[in-house]
Image 1 (cartoon, rainbow, N blue to C red):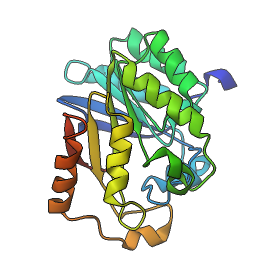
Image 2: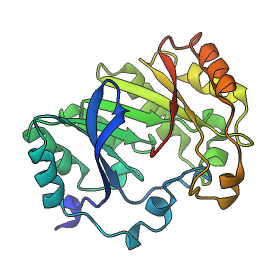
Image 3: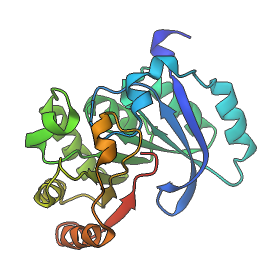
Length: 240
C-alpha cells in the first residue's frame, strides 16, 4: 500500500452504545498521536503503536458488511486519526458502502478536518478539548500549535454537521474553573461532554493512582456547564 493510501488500524470494537449518541456504532482505532497527554489511557496506541499489529482492511470491511443491517455507523478514533495519510480514502470507502462516519480528533490538523467535510466524507465530528487553550502544553505533555487548535474549534463550532466537544476532567491536572473556561470557548457548539477520568493504563503511570472526581461533583460541574452550553452531559470515558 502506498504511503498516501496507508491507514493503520490497531483496534476494533464491533458494537458500541457509547460513541454515537442514540445509535449503535462500530469503532476503529488508529495508531499514533502527536500529543502526550499524561492521563491518556490508550497509551499503547500512542507510545507503542508500531508494535501493535495492523488489522487488515479486508477483515474490517467483511465484518461491517456482515452486520450492515444493524450497524450503519462507524467511528474513527485513535490515537489521532488525522495523522493517517490514508484517512480520506478509508472514509470514502466507508461512505461508498453506505456507512455514516464519525471522526474523533484532537483538533491539531484543521486542514484535514476541513478537507474531509468539504468532500462529504464525515457526518459527525467530535473534538477533545484538553482544557483552556492557554494551558495546552501542560494538558498535552508537549508543545502544541495552539493556533491550529483555535482554528479547529472555530470551524467545528460553525459547521452544520453534527458535532460535539468533550473534556476529560482530571484531578490534580484540572481545576473546575478550567472546565468552565473550556466550555465558554466553544459556547456556540451543539453539545459538550464532561468526561470522567478513568485511572487505567495511563500514559504517565502516576496518573493511574489518582481518584476521579465523585459522581456528585461531576454532576455539579455539568450543571454549571449547562449555563454555558445547553446540551451538556457527563460521560464516562471507557475507551476514548
